[in-house]
Image (cartoon, rainbow, N blue to C red; front, side, top):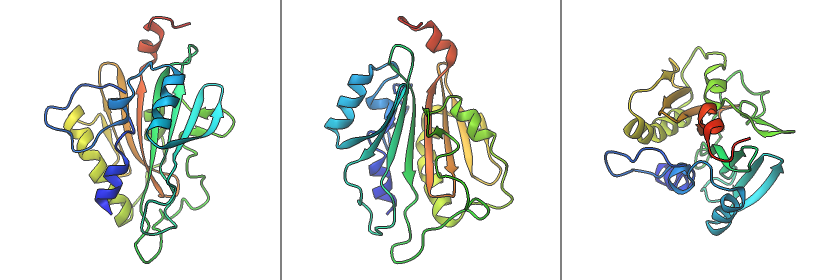
Length: 217
């Protein structure tokens, strides 16, 4: 199950510093650098078996076309949001990796979050992907206990590559619900989101970099 989750993250992140050691998994930014034209972002996803779902003036949502790649059919498909600047170039990505439901049992959830929409931290249903993704994740009220086993395992597995590439974390939740990293040009985050059904990886170009990019308005 863990191997399958990591394989699904291949093809999900924009260009960041190359890892010092061979990557255990790819990031969305490896295949889609920041400031890629919207048409090119869509073409890449179409070529790699992602289906275009919801659309907004400055955001797109893509869902894996094979909507049931997991052994437990209750596990939802992976999806990715992309936000664009005024020139329609990609400036942020948020990939929602589903926490697999237990093979022959329930889907673990985070106690006390049962009323929250799964993507409410990062997505507005009227606007699409929001800005300041890492800060939005850091602003979530702290939990008093650690996440359930499946969420904890997935978060740790996905965080390993981010630790390898980006070094020391700039912030980490005490119980393992989130962490952030930073480069000179971008902020990166990893969060157990919503009801606990997703581990969300975010990559966002810093506003000052967007403003300074050629063609910015």
